[in-house]
Image (cartoon, rainbow, N blue to C red):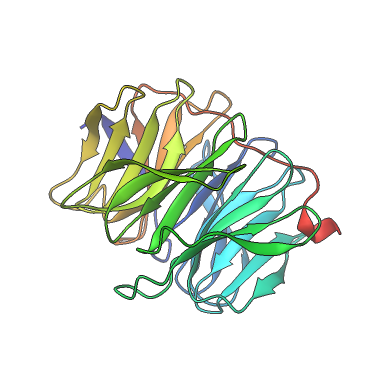
Length: 273
């Protein structure tokens, strides 16, 4: 396993992680609605706010506002200036969100485990909400938009697969399958590879552009990596990888020798309409 250590401890079963490069802050959430602001250099955290229900996936916009998927409340929220506001509600299991370059927000509604009733939503910059696709119903989970903004990559946890969606045509392509695992989160490297965190077993995998699959990190004892869910590249050079551990109370810092691709941080999106 690569050099791996606890970044911060004492959190409440963190699920999502999101890096804010402007503020040099990492955001993560907790099981009881906690929103934690993490200083990765000082290795400290503070409770910034509370949302309703289990905080799952997070995303940050260009003004430092944090998109929050609140599973317990079935809502998509935003943390703005210390206050959590509901953006949209009425979802079954809002799980993970990712911005496109134009301010469109894509997010998975995983549905009920075993019911295969999940879908992927698209919230346009004008506030219009629609279903991007219902062709990935098997607990759609972590997602990320490519740097050129043409595709959304997304994992299904129950099948389990890694897929990409053409955002123009909405065509869905299965890229690879991880039999015997439960993939959860996804991130891009600067070189175009894909990092997938597996909730089961305790594993982080690299999918190469040529289709190769390599295990980057694995913890059979489930201590440093404990049901890893979402991952994010952090730091000024995005050269450190952080994993949330749903099975424990800490974030894990890994030196995997890779740099992450820059994400999309739109200044304006649906909350500004």
